[in-house]
Length: 67
Image (tube, rainbow, N blue to C red; front, side):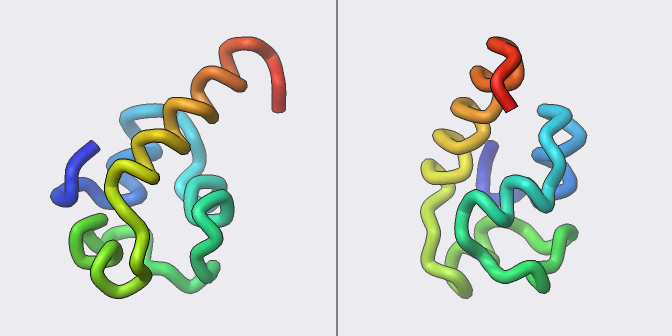
């Protein structure tokens, strides 16, 4: 996951819904799904690593049946 990805790209790559990622990051529901994470990071003040960590946690929860 890099700044060139969009939330839609992350959803396609991981199977985790983009809206779930946005919600877990505490971002507004109106965040555009097709804007690059790099641009959104500057607008909303999150780090790309935050997205990576969140996705890793959600994938782990999904694998272990938690949800």
